[in-house]
Length: 155
Image (cartoon, rainbow, N blue to C red; front, side, top):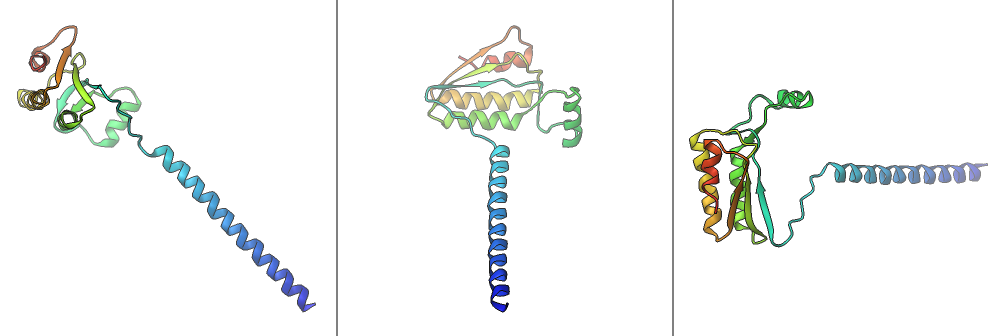
């Protein structure tokens, strides 16, 4: 009787251990799948690529409102388009150093200005890009003063 009880206890503990290991494997696979879904993917940049810079709305130093208000406004389709100046300058400076980027295209149709100091800072970044020997093209249907100032930096 004792031998049977010992044998059944041994089997039970083995099955319980196997269950725990299988649960850990399932959870690990689940977490890896969730992590792969929410991780940002880096775009593949081919050789001889063009950087298309298309700012939307006003150029700003800091986005208006807190993140929750912006998310709610965007969910209801009431968000005001804004583009962070620092993002644009960082992208242009990074593209200037990237050998795969051969030219920049400025699509200024959606830009709504942003002040002379911001325009000068972005223009300086465009000039640094051009100083590397890369071409800059600008296009739009019609330009206001801020858009024309940036378009004037192009080739």
